[in-house]
Length: 155
Length: 83
Image (cartoon, rainbow over all chains, first blue to last red; front, side, top):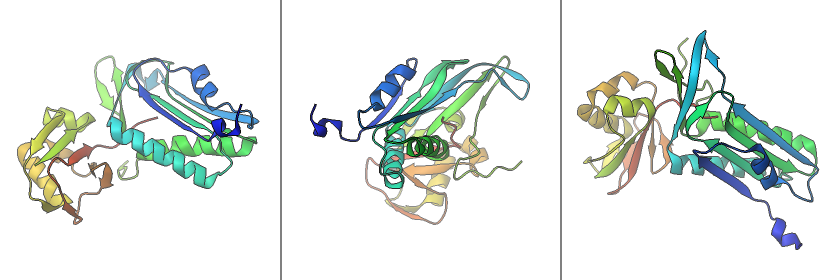
């Protein structure tokens, strides 16, 4: 295998089908890397005592992909040894306990990939135009991330 | 003429996801908001929570002067909840 085939890559996908941890982690595995770090965001079955039936996600898809790619560029500036980055986010209906987002990062040593994964999910929650609707038994609610960089929380 | 995109709560309040609007070529972001609220008054309730994305760059509602081209995308972005 030529060295040039293992250039750092970003894998960004928004899709309606069930996400696969195996698929996402295999995307970032690399012979030069001793660490693959993963974050999986799963759906909880309750919020403030209400039973959550399922979640629905929608996105401004083209801008969301662009914003996630910006996050990948920032990761590479902050942690230059990071090799591959994969961010898969699910759209549409997500049943309870299934994954809504999987982020995987590979690096030669573990510190960089662990930090980069945390940075990815925190920044995604602050700046990527994706919305989640929680469906309860009698009603629904559009959620708002506290990380959202322009909204003031008035609680 | 610009394409206005509505998402999440703003799409529910406006009753649609996408439309073409005629607006002045040069307009502040706040004036643009006011033009949109004239067409969809129910959007007024989320005024303090939204941001625009103009040509896929975030723009706060305020005095920033926008120079719009025909066919530009302007999106109403309610507070996000990805991840």
